[in-house]
Image (cartoon, rainbow, N blue to C red; front, side, top):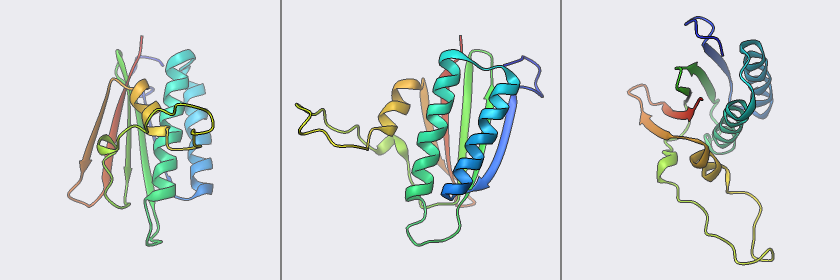
Amino acid sequence: MPNDAHAARIEIRFPGTHAGFAQGFLEARQALDAHGLAGGPRYNAELVFEEITANIVCHGSPDGHALEVWFTLEDCGDAIVLTFEDNGVPFDPRTRPDPPRQKSLEEARIGGYGLMLVRHAATSIDYLRTAAGRNRTTVRLPHP
């Protein structure tokens, strides 16, 4: 991504629905295209966006209230910083353990590996429940 401050920041807001997720992902990919992020950093940014946002959409509103998602991506030179805010139920992804390793394919289950993938891609993950009652998850990715 270019080094000028204006081009190095992407902000997207979308409803926390499946359709909103699809639209947010499309906008994020278009912005990444426009800013030239490619290769491993691009893959990791898309992976983290998809996994964190999917968790918000699928689990953030068990009572059915309308979810909103605010996404920011910043190129800080040595790191790409992705910040997700949502008005869903409190959820600190740092407290969720990795799934146990399976001994065979017969024991393996589908799903539940998204946060583990995010942890492996990230150099750090931070969480804050804001005074406004929002979840704020910040993921730092290495940027060569």
